[in-house]
Length: 61
Image 1 (cartoon, rainbow, N blue to C red):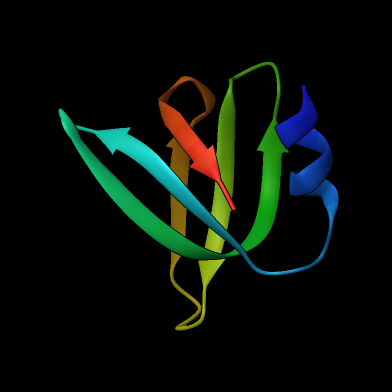
Image 2 (cartoon, rainbow, N blue to C red):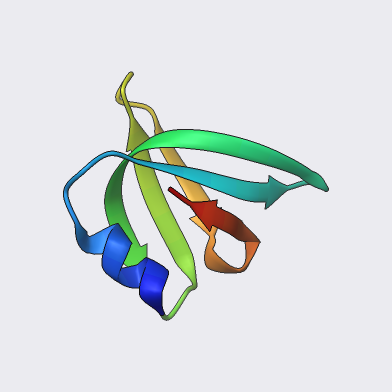
């Protein structure tokens, strides 16, 4: 629950997450959060959009 508060801030964040069995890292700002679908949308510095499953998040810093 603590990490959800961090996601609502407008500051850039770095997320380590699992994807296809490996750990990946992305840095950007939160574009959207869907609690019902358990998805987080991130937009990086290059304005590319990514979607991450909340269950795959390993660490937010």
